[in-house]
Image (cartoon, rainbow, N blue to C red):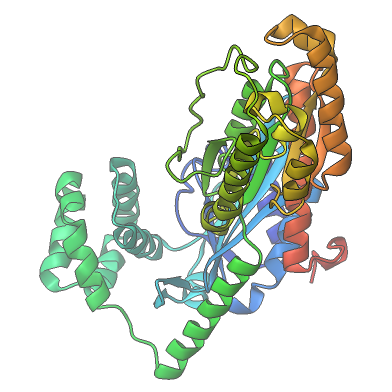
Length: 452
């Protein structure tokens, strides 16, 4: 998803108005019209505390919301600002660095880069060409990947100031490797540069600057705190969708997944249960069940045995599958969930009292948000006639009952046009994400602090 030019312009305007000393690090050649990925920028460490407040101000000025905050290094944090309308959704992804560190190593000092920054003709501050070159080279080598487009950006930065770029290369690589990198860029021989990534990465780490022992210990402690905060307040999100066949779950899930794919690091879909073997970054539709009540219910013992197995899958899966994904900033989407058995027990061949299913359901970890898609029985029957009309009426009341009892449930009018259904759901999700970010960052009313 491309970044929103309007959000970017407001970002720059807010930074300038506030007097924040910043510089963009890479990928800015097409700004503000073309923003293909994160907006990488750097500020000095003493200015870091101001950034979340300023980003919240950017969001408010554009009718948007600050919906994501992921501290992925001790001195780096990724944010997402999102703006949703009835039929539109746009974002910008500011990626903040205060000093450039990766994997516990200090590569570049923010104070130095900000001191040498330059004004871009499009109206924002950027790093000097040589600093931009070495930053992007270190980043791509440390990630172990270099596409042709990324190599092209390296080449542009190198050609803008080859002399100082050459000087910086000698600080991080041997003379032979520095010459190899320069020659590859001069001749546009990107393939040879890409095939040498592992060798250059190893050499880069051998030549990496070493901090004093106290600095390394301080960073180790800061990283431990970062990991603890991620475990205590996961940056991923789990959501579930319930409703009878014909309510439009598949279409809604597809559009919500598409809209949110760049608000999280990953997206994974599960049908009904949290099962590690059924992992997919893109939704794969399950084989439709055209006769959900075709099989006879089990007896008492069979129903209870199946229920206990069903319940145990959720309890174990929530701990060993769902939680780790939430920690790794994944959006987990469930099409149906445990509580579906309470509304449509016949689908699961459950043939005894629902008292047992309700009792076990009280301790099943729920998704953070559970959407119950509701539509009149007449609408459901017009879309799918897999069960009798009377059963559609009964199911509707049962699902509405779940909506009243489950703490994370939101009932959505699924008889509306699809765009409106999705917009209603997105509003709830974004409000939830915005609230989480505000709580994590302790954001006070920010308007008064823009000029601080």
